[in-house]
Length: 155
Image 1 (cartoon, rainbow, N blue to C red):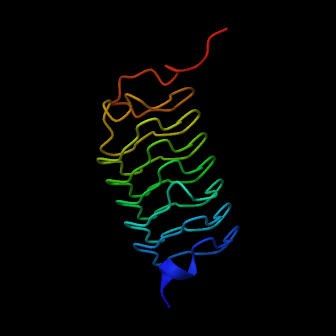
Image 2 (spheres, helix red, strand yellow):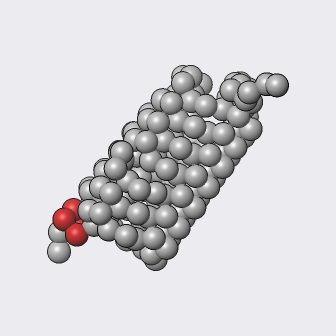
């Protein structure tokens, strides 16, 4: 079975996909809201612009290295200990997401909304990666000297 053909437009809301091998999968127009993808392999997967939702999805310990998550909706997603090396998260919505202990080496965080997100203890994050990201109530690792409230609206 070809994963690329079988999951396009799929409704995988609340699906249990623990340890699933979705490497290089194309999930265009897929709905993964609330799905359990713990320890899944989504390396080089295309989950980007046409992905319906990853809101409240459990992606703990998931390999998303090189994945295209451009403009993805990841509100309240659990990305704790996820591998996001070289992932494209440009324009993604990561409000209230848990990214503790995630590997963000060379991840594209341009225009990412990290309001309320928890990035404590992430690995390989640089201030340059956060230059265009939205920070408001964002919990940053100790080695980052940026203000986690830099982009909050002031009355």
